[in-house]
Length: 240
Ligand SMILES: Cc1cc2nc3c(=O)[nH]c(=O)nc-3n(C[C@H](O)[C@H](O)[C@H](O)COP(=O)(O)OP(=O)(O)OC[C@H]3O[C@@H](n4cnc5c(N)ncnc54)[C@H](O)[C@@H]3O)c2cc1C
Image (cartoon, rainbow, N blue to C red; front, side, top):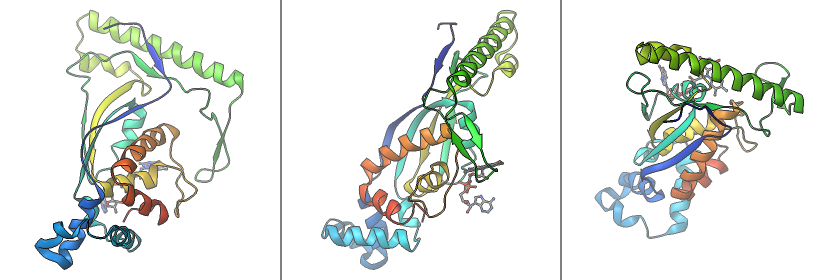
C-alpha cells in the first residue's frame, strides 16, 4: 500500500449483485387477482404489464416494488456515507472498518465542474460556478490539509497507537467503501431525495456528491427495470 495521498474528484458505484426485473413487480401485484397462476400471467401482454406498473406507481401501491434486490459497491467520501446511512428503511449496509484495517490515503477534491459558490436562502439556494482562483484555493487547501492529517495518522500508527484511536485525525473527505443493498422501492425513495431533477413533483436539493452516487445507481437500476424506472419518472419521481 502506498502512503502517497491520492486525490479523486469522482465516486465509484458498481452493481455487484442483483435479482431485479419488471416481472418481479408484476407477479407480486398479480397474486392479488391471479393467485398462484400469477407467474404464468407475467409475460402474456406487455402493454398490460406496462399499464399495471404505471397504475401501481401512480396510486402508490408500493409493496410489489419490494420483491427484488440490488447490491451496490460504493466508494465515496465519508461525508457522502454520513448522508447515505440516514436512509434506514429497505437498505442494508456494510462499510470498511477503520478499526480492523489501515485506511488508505484516498481523498476527495472537487473537480472543475463542481459548482463552488452557494447563493440564496437555505432551502432555496442555488450553486454557481467558482472562479479559477476559488478552485485553486479549494484544491490547495484540501490537498494540504489531507497530507497533514494523513501524516499525523501514520505517525501515530508507527508509534504503536491503535488504528481506532489514530483515525480520529482523518477528515470527512477521506474515501470509504461499502456494500449497500436495497430494493426498487427503497431506491426510489432515496432517488427522490438525493437527486435534483426537473421532472420531480417534489423538488429536492441534495449535496452534489451524494447525487453523483444516486445518478450512477439510477442508471444501473433503469437498465434492470426499465418499465418501473419509466413509471417512476412519468409519475414525478415520487416513491410509491
Ligand atoms: C436535501 C436534504 C437535506 C437534509 N438535511 C438534513 C439536516 O440538515 N440534518 C439532518 O439531520 N438530516 C438531514 N437530512 C436527512 C433527512 O432528514 C432524512 O433523514 C433522510 O433524507 C432519510 O430520509 P427518510 O427518513 O425518509 O428515509 P428512511 O430512513 O429510509 O425512511 C423511509 C420512510 O420510512 C418512514 N420512517 C422511517 N423511520 C421512521 C420513523 N422513525 N418514524 C416514522 N416513519 C419512519 C418514513 O415515511 C420515511 O420517509 C436531509 C436530507 C435531504 C434529502
